[in-house]
Image (cartoon, rainbow, N blue to C red; front, side, top):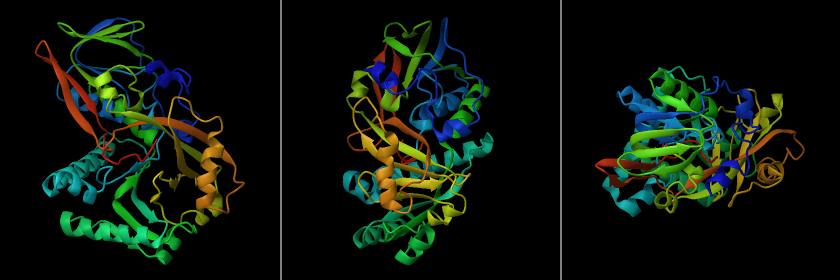
Length: 386
C-alpha cells in the first residue's frame, strides 16, 4: 500500500511538473540515509508537519532525524492551493455543535495561533514564498451568501474576529467577475502563498537549527523493542521517539493511524500568463474558494497565471488527463476561458479524517519511551486542498 501511494503517480525523488516546482528555489538535495545512526526523535515525512516539528524540536535542543521517501515538500505541502486559512476544517458553528462552545473557542484560538506561527516563521527565516493577505469565500446562490454573511457576524460576535469584509453580489463581481458567484466575504486575516517555497524554507530553517534531513530515504519497516528502529533500504535510525507526519502517503507504516486517515487526490492547473486578461479573473490580489462540496479554489500567481484547483478522486492512480478534469470546473467558473492554454497540470494526495479534523494521539508506550503519532496539519484549514 505504501509503495503504491508513494510511487503510483510520481517519479522517485522528482517533484511533479507543477508551476510551483518550476518556480521554486530548492536547495541541493539532502543526503540519502546510507548508514546506521542514533537520534532522540525520528520524523517520517518532510511536509509542513514534519518540517515544523523538526525545526522546533531542534531549536529545543533535541537530536532530530527526518526521513522523506522523495524530496522535502514533495507531497501535498508542495502541491496545494497555497491558501493559509482561518479556523479549522469544520466551521465554528459546526464545532460548537460537535464539541460545545468552550472547546470550539479553544480550537479557534489554536487555529489563530497556527496561522500566526506560519506568518512568523516566514518572517523570522526570511522565506521568499510571496505571502499575501486575503482569502475570499464565495457563494453560488443567495442562500450560500446569506450563510457566509451570518457566519461572518458570528465570528465577530462570538470570537471577536473582525478581519472579515462582507461582499454583495455587485462587490463580489468587482472582485471576481464570474457569473458563478453571487456574493461572499473576504477574510483579511487569512492569506495565500507559494506552498513549495514555504516547505523548502522550513527545511532550510530546520537544517540550520541542527536537524538532520535525509531525502530519497523511504521507510520500509518500523521495529519496536528496547529502542525504535526505523529501517530504509540503505540505512537505519535508532530513536527514542517516532513522529509520523505522512499525511495521505502513510500507507501501511502504522495501521492504527491508517484506519483514521483516508487518502484522496485533488488536482490543480496553471494557465499561461494572462497579461491584461487577468482582470477578467480577479481584480484583487486574494485567493478564492467557493461553497461547493468539492470546492473550487483559485488565485492569480505573481506572473499573472490562473492557478485553479478542482476535482477529486479516490484510489491510487491519478486520471490520465488531469488538464481535462480541472478545465471543466474552471470553465464553469470562467466561461470565457474554454481555450486558454494550460502550461502545468498536476495532482496530489492528501489525507483526511472522517470528521475532517486533526488527530493528536500517542498510540502506546514502548519500554517507557513514548511512540508519538501525530496526524495533523501545520495550520488548520491552511493550504486548501492539494
